Length: 328
Ligand code: TXA
Ligand code: MG
Image (tube, rainbow, N blue to C red):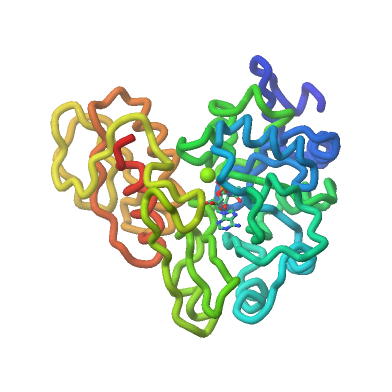
């Protein structure tokens, strides 16, 4: 890495994702070091998924409970099919929606080289083919599957810009590849395709309607009790700011910050961020996590969140808001 293309802030390094920086990052990954990289959903904390020490370093850096398995990123459908069994509706979803904001839970292949620690010892594996050109370039150069949870400390809000990663994990990574703000802004939709029909384990960047249409069959959304989540990562409180979050707010109290949506805002003099003044759910999803971080730092007594329509991407946005509002 060269000083002209990167800057150092303490031990932390944010690098413009030039071809040279991507090559440096790939070399670091092959040495077992960690690199944060942009995907179209959120930034990931990447490590060589076949290297148990690199995977252990990911858990350690995130402060993540060991039972929570990681998503493995690969460059294309063929690479995914070498790691996990891809058939039937799973194959249809992969063909239509990869690369993209979709993660499929598959049965591991017998010779799957992914470290057991990455899958928390499960017989299944979560795989994703990201669409972001920097993620694609990094996967090509590194030539190993990359374990990549969201690049935040466990339980924090997922990062949608490089500076969010630096704030949470700056001293834990060899490099943060900067690709600007992520386009989708919510994590991938996690779909279990090991059964007779797809089951959504985590709502995300691909809507339930799209999954059902492509699979050609009805799709369930797993609920899972809070203490026994359907997807091991779906703890009730997750994606959380430190400031109390008040949902479904129709008015704003003194001292509160406002997380707004739409054109029709309650009267309010304090900090306000509008997720989308035009009421566009795609724009709101892209702005959500950065807005939560900014309002969390505003020193408000609480964040009052206006109602968001529970359709399309609104289902994933409301899922994240409910989790962020669950008391710790
Ligand atoms: O958009 C995303 O998915 C981002 C980017 C970086 O790819 N990654 C991400 O990873 O959000 P992470 O580790 O924060 O979330 C992974 C989710 C968790 O809810 C985890 O429990 C679930 O996937 N998961 C992983 N392996 C699984 C498995 N074998 N069975 C069921 N759920 C699994
Ligand atoms: Mg996460």
